[in-house]
Length: 108
Image (cartoon, rainbow, N blue to C red):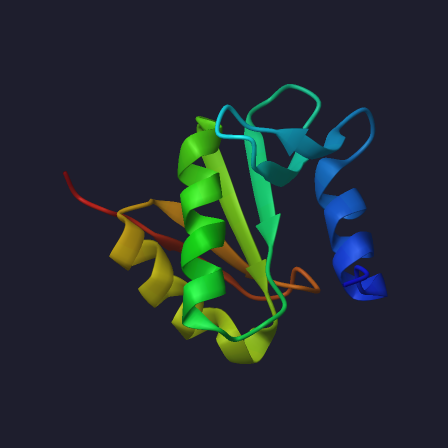
């Protein structure tokens, strides 16, 4: 299935100047965006499906970046937090427009 316009724009905006999109991970999966300095890893998931959000959280965990961001539509932000907690990943949850955000912290 082709990538939607909002998904593509969110990836490129998250990567920033000099950043990379579709970064290969050791498992063969691809991370949506990685900043130029490798500090910020971003996954964009526009569906409200818990299983797909969990897979996005797994990719963020595998990235090894110190700062992780899961971008979702505003109406799916709480579900994204549930997926991150379920996978044991601490990350920022941001809406697609960058207006709303909160941090999900996993205590170890």
